[in-house]
Image (cartoon, rainbow, N blue to C red; front, side, top):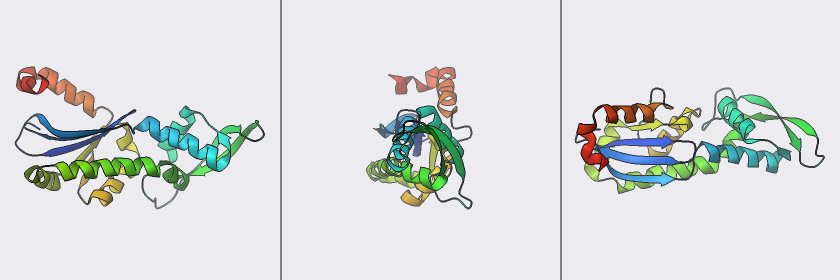
Length: 190
């Protein structure tokens, strides 16, 4: 990020998705979207209400997302039994959800993220866009752990997309790097 080349980062956190093009230790342009892991969980909760008449909690939705969630079709689709309260009878029930169902539930939110990445790419200066074409897009944050999200984004934007090593800690590692080399990043922070 300290070189005169463009790098694109897509950080899907708990509450927001941050998209940035970075060069020469600075943010050239960015976009923030109020779609993150929490919104994905809410989409799963709503999917269960609408399609299964079952009320589930946000922790259950997060577990579903982590265990059977995917952004693309899987070779072998996964299934999970889910407990919740039947909205008609009011009693606890068990339903089975598949990765296909979760994909349907997450579709709109994932499309919003894809559209925001495309908008950012469209605004990127040509020279930096060429760098992103060559270097690819780096995904970070907990949302980057969703199965196949890199593949989905790669198909939408037609550019290489990679998930950072240990994406949950990528932002913390970057912040640590800045703090250890504060004098090098002083102009970025002011």
